Image (cartoon, rainbow, N blue to C red; front, side, top):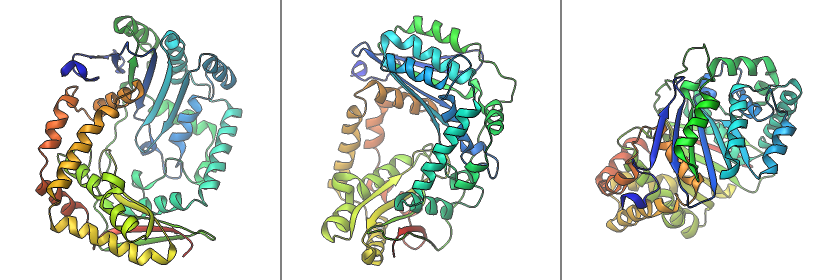
Length: 423
């Protein structure tokens, strides 16, 4: 049982270099490929007011050229071996991802080391990349799902909170950014002490450790080690409603929700199971069964509990006919009220446990899947026996735990509602 799992303490090799960089390796000779996942604490949390989107633009420019290779040269080298390498930023972190055949892993690691330690931040590439971001933001302005999500976050969190901002930024904020802002942000917040690199695949661990030490051990900085302390907030009192009208839309996208449960909270697993029953089990859970299938009020309806640190959102999203908005919201609130007042059924509990435990192996079929799970374990300090403990953790969540966590976090009379479309 232990060795049939792809992630166990016996299969993981973890090292922290003298500069603070952490590497986690998992050998899997069953596949000729290698997956790389990485994380740096340099996300939007660290942006100054008016600089929304700076972290993401900085991350994307890592891939647009290094001191040794231009953007075109990087593309050619990666294309020649069928490899991929990318970087992007979210609220807290820069996310790094790459795939390559095992024989070409040295090339991928060399290019990654250049990107992280010797980015070019070329003026021409900066202008091009900023223009692409602005174009995408312009397109998003007419997207009902994006506009509803932005309105929801801005209403759920107080102004200035890092979770209220968009990692993509806004049209005015991105337009105001200059390349000197990119260089300053990189110099201040890119630190090996907050960097995690996970590699999974057909590797030889001891040899790879030496190569990683050679490439990344010399990444030295003099700036202080960044840290993040996301402010805790509560769901706004009463009902907060935000509407974003967009002309000529046949569907209204809505988001209804509140502050959820942190990934580090002991109640996370009960909340996750509630989320599954409410909006994911079977065909979109109770929401899909009632609002979509039985009543035909929505094109889709699902629930989503974010997995992150601090006051993460827990929301229900739906796409509805404009004429059905009021009815859909009332049914949604009724379903939430029902989960607060009555425990779920024994059948739902069994199905939820089976779903969460049974889907775990499916979510670990590829090296990419395994690397992503390892990175999550490392970030949230879950322990590398996590998969061994996971079934027991899920099986120990009771119906009362699920009812209680819904009662504490989802209130049909205290919520944020955001809608975008043609009303």
